[in-house]
Length: 451
Image 1 (cartoon, rainbow, N blue to C red):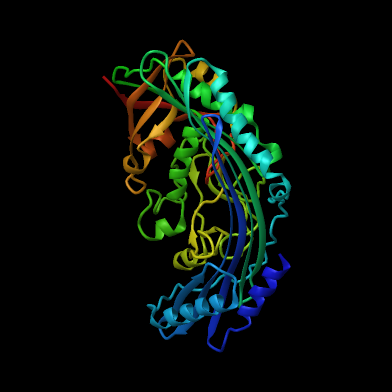
Image 2 (image 1 turned 120 degrees about the vertical axis):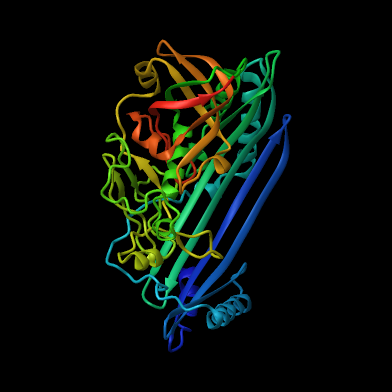
């Protein structure tokens, strides 16, 4: 890592009078293994490295900013990327809110997010995990007729963010995943279930856990059909709840609010959810797979309270969105790699947990629908108006039990109504890839369209 820091410092020191330079330097190794039909179908190990620059020049009506990047750490490529950023800055539009992040005195959390076993585990062992996963799914239940794919993937990376105005951030990360898609049939339609196990390193992923997850979801939906249209309570499992929270998190970005693209605009201090809902963005919690010590601008990540007992208390900000709103960054800058520019967004959403697991919540609800998966989220949810109409698959809840599997149904509501109608928040947190952790959620009333 020290050589990346030295490289970054070398280019930051090239800042001339009247300009500021920010650099992101990153490198990593990724492994992908795919098993199919009892054999190895794909094996890929790839190394990547790159450097991204932003150059800021002050103007009479604000600052101008330009960017450039290269998919290499070679000096010639890096210097060309810096020259492109400088040239682009000359022709950029001046903006009074543009600025680079300045150190703000917040100390970064001491997080261990890199497992060196990603690099030391033999490749043969990784291949065997994918093969074992496919075999386990095939043998688990006679109704499993096919395994669509069984995958082992991992990555390890290191990133440095540095600027000529005093920011230096160094972060190492790793991850390992087992995922599998099972197809089951018992004389009717095919049903598919997806299973996952993930950890920081390969020693902590579980073939059995991923296999059980996929098989239970596929076989559980056999014999599913549409139910009658109804208004009823709904229970979202942890995965479905995570999808919902990620959508809500997008509307809690200070950038979305500033651009008039959030249903929470001008609502700070108001009740926007059930008093059972307390939502935070906390990248300092190492249990969250998106945990991080630093944000995309190199500021220390921190716990940001967003909704407290139903009341909207704030948003996440990067430097630009914060200046536009007249406030300070919350360390909420997201960045899509060394070639991307930062923008405000939630990184590691989680609910303050409630009481009871899935079984207890289903029992308390008594009757309604249990939602195991959501479909058509990108087209069926409007984060500005809050309109929510998505396809669902899951089970009817009758007598406090999960009974008939159902699919081809549509749940219609609004995000505002869903948040206000929460009756239960589970304590069964599931840490998942993406921006949100999930826990079982129950809602008092939704419209479910079927036959």
